Amino acid sequence: MSLLGATAVVMLSQSAWSQDIRPFTARYEARYYGVNGGTIELTLRKGSAPNEYVYESRAKPTFLAAFMISEAAREVSTMVVDANGVRPIKFVADDGKKNTAQDSTYEFDWAQRKVTGHTGDIALDQALPDRMQDHLSVQIAVMWALQRNADLGDYTLVDGGKIKQYRYTKDGAATITYKDRTLDAIIVRSARADRSGGRINRYWHAAELAYVPLRAERSNKDKVDLTITLIDLKFTD
Image (cartoon, rainbow, N blue to C red; front, top):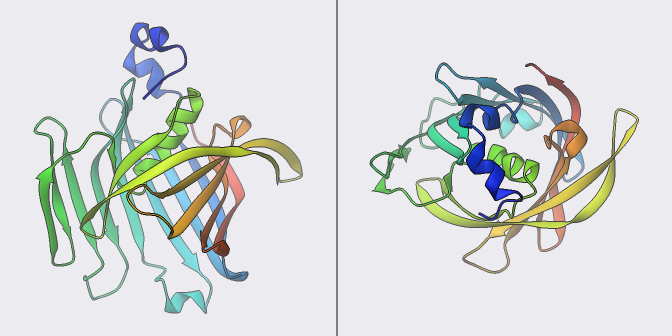
């Protein structure tokens, strides 16, 4: 990864760099094809070990959306954030249903360079690629890179028991309103790096809010089917 001011990275301690990622609680409104689907709450907090962070996602669906996602659903990613970037340690997903076919647990052993775990009955045990993330930790990895004006590039993600390559690129700039404030935002685009077409995600990040996403859109064949908009953000450090 190409960093602006790479010399400074070498000179600064890991603990100093990790403080750039501020713990926060963010609440988003989700809309599916324009219909209110409820809210999603994302919480980033410090873990028990040095440079460790825990990132958790919980959904509060509307009555109709509850048929698709349970209010008991949760995802948790434990990661290390330091001068070398973001490295997930463990990811757990529980869809809140009795059937565990969609539940996931993955562990990332960076010393042995190995990722193990499962989604339902689909097991994974293989070498750990560089720039490996789960789909929560990659959000923090993007924030980390934006703080340094670094190139984003490709990330390897584990999803549903499979390893997938995603390409993240800066996709222009825009202004966006949050609580009557107009903020300058960078748009980040992500899509599968190993295939053409398919779904595209876009995220709006503002430096004034420490690059916590203000908005996200998912589209397929240029039609937006899911939007997530920030409605409340509190930094907890």
